[in-house]
Image 1 (cartoon, protein in one colour):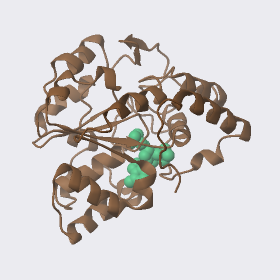
Image 2: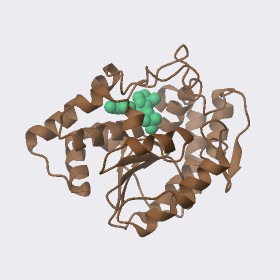
Image 3: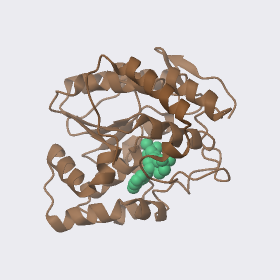
Length: 286
Ligand code: A3P
C-alpha cells in the first residue's frame, strides 16, 4: 500500500481503519467493563491464536462459535473504526483485542477490574512474520527490502511504532494481578499447560476433557482449516490474498531461515541497548 502514516500522540497509524477521532475515542471515551478481558499484543505476536484460545475457553471447548463467526467479530480491535462498531454485538464477558501501546490504552481500563493477557514473541520471528504480512495487509506500507524494513522495525518507524517500546511500556504492569503475560514460544511448547494457566487467570474452571478440546481446536492446523479464523474471508481491499496467507508457518525460530549472521548480530546489539533497563529475560526459544 502507498500512503503516509499519521501520528497520534507520537504513535504511527495508517489511514482507513484509524483516525484521530477513532483513536481519541479509544483512549478517552471507550468504556471498559469490569468483566472484560483484553488481548494486548504487538502485531504478529500470536494475537489471533489467543483470540481462538479464549473463544474456545468461553465456549468450554465447543468449536461451533469459532466455526461460524469470524474471528475479528468474536474479539474486535477496539481502537479501529470497524472494531468500534462491531463491539456492540459482543456478548459478555467480552474478550477484546488491542495493539495499542500502554501510554494510549483506554483510560477507563486503569480504574476497572478488567484483565489483560499480553502475548509476546521473539521479535526476530515477529519481524519475519510482519515482513510477509505487510505485503498483503492494507494497514502497512509495502516493505521495500528485508534490509530496509529491518531498520524500520528496529527504529520503530512502523504502524504502532516500536516493538521495544511496546514491551517496555506494558511490562510496567507486570506485577499487577489483572495483568498476565505469556509468550508465543510457551504456547508452542506446551499449549495445554498454557490453557490451564489462562483459565486460572480469567477464573474459568474447565475439566480435563474440555481443556483437551480447547487445545485441539486452537492448533495451527485447525485454525488454518477454519475459514472463520484463517482470514480467507477478509475482503480483498483489506488483505491481498494473491500475495500470501495470514496462517503462514506458525513456527518458532523461522528468523533463522531469513536473517544473515550480520543481521542477527546487529539485531542483538540493538536489542541489548534498547532493553537494558528492563532487567527481564523472556522465554523465546523452544
Ligand atoms: P507466522 O507468520 O510466523 O506464521 P497475529 O495473530 O498476532 O497477527 O500473529 C500471526 C502469527 O501467528 C503468524 O505467524 C501465524 O501463522 C501465527 N499463528 C496463528 N495461529 C496460530 C496457531 N494456532 N499456532 C501457531 N501459530 C499461529
